[in-house]
Image (cartoon, rainbow, N blue to C red):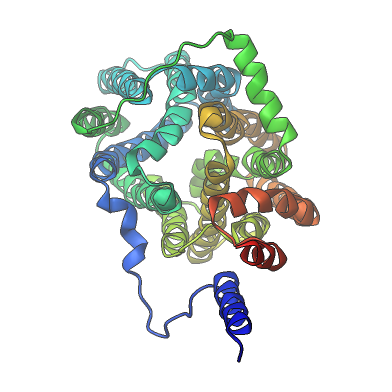
Amino acid sequence: MPKAEAEEANSLKDITEQSTGPKVSKRLDFSHAWRALRHRNFRLYFGGQSISLIGTWMTRVATAWLVYRLTHSALLLGAVSFSGQIPAFLLAPFAGVVVDRVDRRTVLICTQALAMVQSLMLAALTLTNRITIPEIFALAAFQGMINAFDMPGRQSFMVQMVESRNDLQNAIAINSSMVNLARLLGPSLAGMIIAASSEGYCFLIDGVSYTAVIASLLLMRIHRAEVKRHAASMLEQLHEGWSYVSKSVPIRGILTLFAIVNLMGWPFVVLMPIFAVQVLHGGPNTMGLLMGSVGVGALISALALVVRKSVRGLTRVLPMAAAIFGCGLIAFGFSRAMWLSTLLMLVAGYGMLQGLTATNTVIQTLVDEKMRGRVMSYYTAAFVGTAPFGSLLAGAMAHWIGAPVTVMINGSVCILGAAWFWSQLPKIRRDMRPIYERLGIIPPPLEVVVESAGRQ
């Protein structure tokens, strides 16, 4: 074979290998699954947040039970949840601008310290038997204001902790595993503590647990990025962030599905006390078991995402996760048996977490660094900000038509949202492809590589 033809054949061979990727070993190797933990800062965050999140989930369950014990009202359950989440919807876009303008670690230290104060105040009022519904509303709203800044700050800070963008997807999946291990342990512990003593001890444990994550943030060695002086005003940057999100077909579509699922699907958690008492004829331990089952399903989902080597294919996961979540809720609404309800909560938890983590991962991959805080603030608005309206709606629906019918209707809306997103998937993937090619996640088209090789 002439030399020129041999070189061309070798070039085409290399191109084919690049396009199809390396040969897959038959031996399963999961050594990549925890690669983000090689970064010291992320290991510190993982340790501190693992402790703190158990307390956070204990507080969520204890707050819902406290409200229901004091009022026995589905409407007030939804209203308290609304007051705790509406600040994120109103303040998150402004918080995103702040996160893009100042040091992100400083933002997180401040939010965690304020959250600790909120939990300790809740503990003091409950343990002294002076807690009232107006005080619960006020402290829930205060926590919502904190979350408006904490969530975009935490999501934007992730890329600084892992240092390498190649490990970002793994870090997000590990973080989801951590959240859902806490979701598994926290509600179960809360159920036992409430049954044995008082909701106040759950709040106290949560308040103390914040010291772990604050310590981990202080111990990190962060290459402090220079805080840039922005000529644009906050309102101009706010408009810039909105334009970026609204003009990006993939980000806009993903956030729309995410908002639909969070508006209609996630508020089922608010109704857990009603299912525990009125439908399944149990008590706080029953609610803890149901919430723990959600955590098991979510943890299984998170571990499945941890072993993924790439973000490729996650856009297909999004509608499938929404459909699984919706089916789980519909079946849960029909169930009157404890064992079946527990199993169905596992299915719902799996679908719920798949959508949450896949949404976070794809958006964090697509977004420009200079826009990260603002885009993640819209993620926060879609995640926490739509939930208050859903909680209020779920509480009102449960009051008029009952909790079982409410979750069945909400599950049906999640399935319709999944069908809509699936119809938009070709357009979304078409616009994502150039970004994935630029980041090296997928190879460029074969003809482009051949042309480039020919010029060389």
